Length: 355
Image 1 (cartoon, one colour):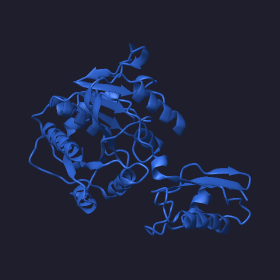
Image 2: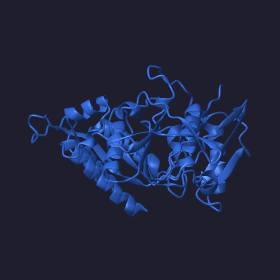
Image 3: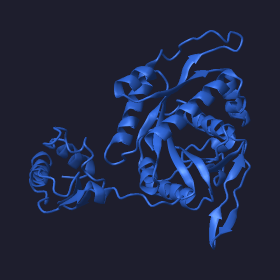
C-alpha cells in the first residue's frame, strides 16, 4: 500500500482533543512534519502546555487511528513526538528594530483588490505624516511596482554596518520592496514553497527599511507557507483581511481570519475591509449599485465580533489610478481618497487599541 501524508491526516481527523472536542488536525495540533520511510511513520503533536493532562491519551489515540484507518502494519508506536506550543512557535527575532508596527494585509480569495487596498492604505498613511514601508510579499503575483510607477526601478545594495543591504525604492512617501524588482515582469514565478519563503526572508532581513511607523505586508491570497514564514520571522502587530461582499469571497475571508487567530499563527485581526462595496458611476456620485451584494462584510464582522474598518466603493478612477501608477489615495478630496483616509484612521485607532 502506498503511503502519503494525506492518508495519515485523514486518519488523525478521527482523533478528538478532549479539552475542546475538535479533531487534532482541525485544531492545528499536527505539525507539518509527517515523515514516511517504508512502513515507518513519524510526526509531531503540539499541545498548549508541557504538562497537558491529555498528552498520553491523545498520543495513544493517534497511534490507534493510523493503524486502524490506514494499515495495521504501519510502525507508529513511539514515533510521535510531543511539543508544547511555546516550543513549536518561538517568539520571532526582532529583525526590524526601527519598525514600530507591522501590519499584514491578507485576503482569503484572489481578485478582491487586496493589493490595491495595500497600496492606497500605504499612501494614505504617508499622507497623514507617518513613515511608511510596503513589502510586496505576493511572491507569485507582485503588482506593487506597477501601482507605484516603479516598474523600472532596480534597488541597489548599500553597506550598513558592514552588511550588504537592499535599499528600497521609494515613491509618494512610501518605501517599497518587491520580488517584482528582481524578476522579468513578463515571466511567471514558478517556485516551490521553500524558495518563495527564502525570498521573503531575504526581502525582510536584508531590506534597509530604517525607521518606520508602519510596515505594510501585501500577502498572497489564501493561506500558505508565505503567511507562516512572515509570522515566524517578524512580530506582526496585526492583520487586516480584505474581501468583497460576495458570499463566495466571504467564505474564504472567514478561513483567512481563522488562520490568523489559530494557535499556529496567533496574530490579532485588526478588522475586515469591504472592497467593491458598491458601484458609483462618476456622473452619478450619489448613486450606489450593490453589484456583489450589500453589507456582506459588515454581517461577517458582526458575527465574528471584529471591527469593519472601512467600505471601499468601485469607481472607475481606482482602476485607472492603479494602472497609471498613481494610487487614488493621492487625491484626498475624491470619493475614494476620502474612503482610504477614513480606513487609514480606523486602522491607526485599532493598532493603538491592540498595543
